[in-house]
Image 1 (cartoon, rainbow, N blue to C red):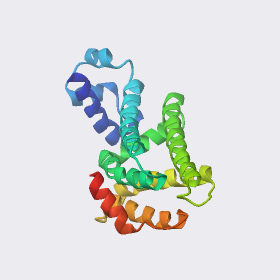
Image 2: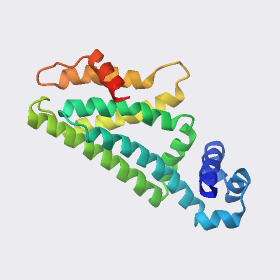
Image 3: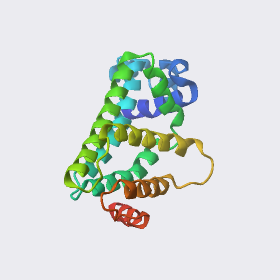
Image 4: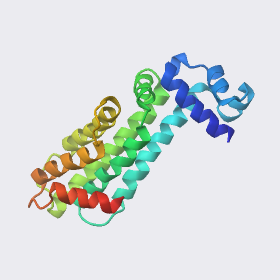
Length: 206
């Protein structure tokens, strides 16, 4: 319970004050625990920050892994992955300042950079393998899987940021599904998927 309270307090403090501005004392005051309790669970503020980052990345990874375990073609798996974006966006809700802190601190903190870079390498490898599978099985046209995977991961990151910055009432998960539906029609060797197909798949997965 104390561990969870410290993590919850840290999210609020880091979001409001940034990593540098938030002190261990601030986090302890917010969690209503002593510094002794803090250091019983975390050896440093950086360790707590890294756990927050790792927890969020693990959540994303779990949803993508679930999509990978689905049967069917590479196209089917890509559709399922986009449907999973709904949960990813929900987990980021209200936490854009914290997410941007992860990116900022990664530029100067080797440990944070290593965790972040490894996550993006993993996402890129996962999507690259899916695209190569699609080309090999004949469901996708021949493409530069490596370059396209970089683009798709970047688009996914963009959806996370836009969903937090855009004040307009946009259903970003549905927007992602529609966008991928358009993209897949161009990538498929024999286009068969439509945006409505994407909506049906998303409903089934949820």
